[in-house]
Image (tube, rainbow, N blue to C red; front, side, top):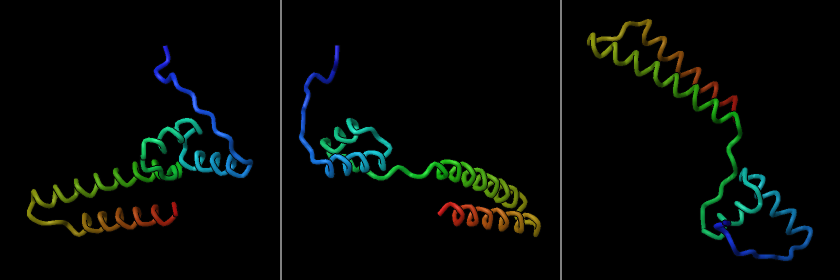
Length: 102
């Protein structure tokens, strides 16, 4: 049995329909789920580009590497120059990735 048992029909102009399709597409949703979320008052935002997921994974890995370097430095009470250079290189790599994705 369907959980949604009510149907609503709305007449739109070609321009209104095109706008609705474009907005739903930008959000990454189909028209029906898009309208349902609008009715519920949800904050609808454009779907982030696919490259953002890969960028977040890479930034997370870089952050993990920097944390490992910091943990080792804290355990010894000092950081070796090569560890500082590696951390700086990772930060520069992260900035480069962010700039390239924009």
